[in-house]
Image (tube, rainbow, N blue to C red; front, side, top):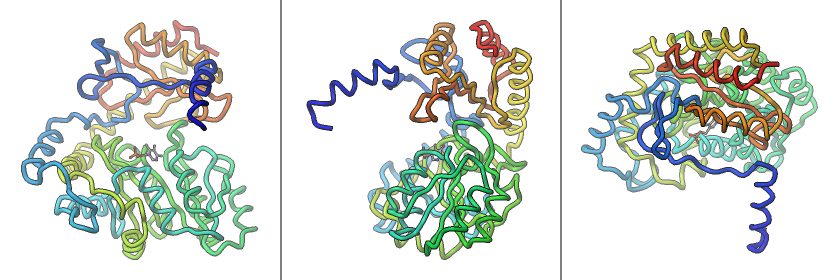
Length: 387
Ligand SMILES: *Cc1c(COP(=O)(O)O)cnc(C)c1O
C-alpha cells in the first residue's frame, strides 16, 4: 500500500466492523481486570492457571533481576545464554519428556525458526486449515510448498502425502486449536507421518500446563513419544504465565535449530529474569495439580449451564469455549453489551477465524469461581443468544 492509500484502507475496515483497537489495561492479569479505571470480570485471558501474577513467580522475577540485571545483552550464540536459560531448557525438556529443549523469544518466532531451518524450496509443508497464523507464516517464509488440509482430517492428509514427491515433508498442527478449543487428532496424524516419513510438528501453546493429567499437553493425552511427535512447540506466555517459547525434540534437531533457525540466531535472548520466573511457574505447573483440576471443574460447570441455557457451544473440553454466532456485527454487539455489564469477553472476527464464523471466545481459568461462570452464562442468555 502506498502512503496515500492508508486512510481509505482504514476507513474500509471501520465500515466492515473489522477495525481493531487495543484495550488499555492497568494492573495485573486476573479474574478482575482494570481497564481505563473500570473493573471487569475477565473471560479473555490465556492465564489459564492463574500464574501470571502469582507472588512466587513475581518474586522469582525480582530475584532474577537482582542476580542477572534486566537485559540479556546479546543473542544466545554471542554471550546472552545465561545459566537461567540453560536450567530452564533442561527443566522444560524433562517436563515434556524429550531429550532436549531450546528457548525462543516467542511462539511466533519458534514456529518461523523451525520451519525455516528444516525446509527449503522443493520441500512441502501441510497445515491444518485452523492452525494458528504463526504456523502458516512459518510455512510461507520457508519457501516450501504449502498446502492446507481440512481440519483434523487425517485421511485427506494421508491422500495428499501419498501424492507428494517432496524431499522433506512436514505436517504442522496446533495441539489444542486456539480458536475452537478442540484437540488435534494426534494419534492419527502421527501414524500418517510415520508412514510417509514426514516430520510432525505440534504447536501445543494452549495445551501445555492445561491438558493431560500432569499438564504435558496433547502428547500426554495421546501418550506419544518424541519419535512419534518429533517436534513439539510450547509457549510460556499462556498457562505458564510468563513469556517466551520453546521447541522440544531430539538432540540432533535442537543442535540443527541452533545452527540454522534464523529467528533464534539473530535476536536478543530473553531477559534471564524471565527465565527464572518461568522456572518457578514450571514448578507450580508440576506441583499444583489442583489448578488443572479446578480448571476442569470450571469447564464442566460452564458447559453444563451453557448447554442448559441453549447457548451454541462447540465440542471443546478445554478452557477455550467459543460461542460461534457467525455474524460480525452480532458478535461485536454482544461483546459491547457485556462490557457495559462489567464482563470482558472478546469478539473474534475474520481473518483470525474463517469467514462466517465470527465468535465470542470464552476462556476459563482455574481461579474463576462458580458464581463468575454463572454470571457470564446468565448475562449471555439474557442477551438472547439461544439457538
Ligand atoms: C499464542 C500462540 C502462539 C504464539 O505464541 P507467542 O509466544 O505469543 O508468540 C503460537 N501458536 C499458537 C497455537 C498460539 O496459540
